[in-house]
Image (cartoon, rainbow, N blue to C red):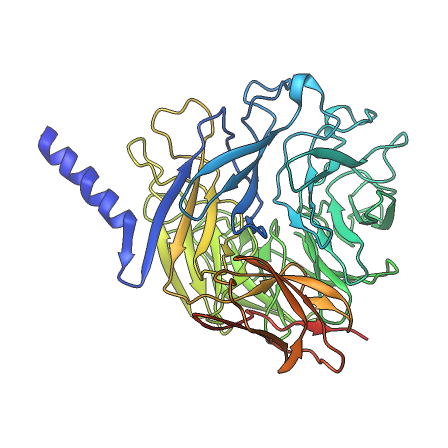
Length: 489
């Protein structure tokens, strides 16, 4: 019986490691508590040095009131070497915040920016104020802004989501609580730390028809407006558009099972077709009590199409955003469901063709992790990367988690620190094999450039360039950007 059980575990592990010849899941690193634990909604980002960066919500060596740690910022190489760069709340000082639930922004000034759910310098909201922090290239962390500067927190509190850098060079995000009407906010913050509340949710006191509790970050559309979701309000959460002047339009109010999704915790991604794609945590006609969640597509005018309803066996309860990979399809994660009820990885086309790629095991003897809350990320080597909130280290007494890769056989490409700029502006291009690069072109127009390292180029948008793809001619071949570079005038 013991021999049979060991073979059963071995077969499960083999099934988890190799999905098919063209798609392979590999566990790259394990969190164990002291080096962080419980990476949450965030996605990884690729730095100019070619490494990947992320956060954990718990763990680390900071001194919090929680027994499971204050969270950390980490760096991991493509080969799986994990390093802790910062532990939140050193010596009990939570000025820079603690419990970062989202990932970080790589900004054009060379710094990283992120949000912390708790902590900060102000205390009217007890532990739940939160902060915006900045981390420099050498790992020094400073506080850019602490929420709740006044009683009752009109500036918002408890930011879950990530920041984005807008076309104007300012940073934009959401807070999940408080604000002028009590339902969270959309805000703008300058690189100098001056915050402006663009919109406060729950302007309709009864029912919060405009939405409530935005837990995801924003995406800036090609039209210049910002798009996002609220987990509550409306009937069962909303999709919204907000202008740079703070004028909000509710594009869709979810109604829940069985005909619609409900409670979108994840953000949106704008596809190459101009539409926006996202997930809902609940709803749909799935086997779960309140629905297992959905994948949806919505136009900028608010016309929504449900592309897929989860049934449990193919995944359930998606919390992360989608990404569009270089093959044109979208990839995502679910917190639950799958073969072992521990979450899944999936692929879906813009027309709704769905493929379940991988089921996490999550059992005591399975070390691949469980509950991938956050979104996937595609490195410029073509590999997809992600994290799991739990699982990993066998016998871990707290939420641990993992970093994993998903190889779909995609080729290398180049990406941008920020995929927008004006003629004459200089920006960063990320990739690999840049040593010996002979040319960079924006939509076919040659650009001036400097090879900073084998993984980073600084290039100047040439005069006459229009929105289009960027190509980089390297000794091993020409690499093309995964998305068009938008030239603004």
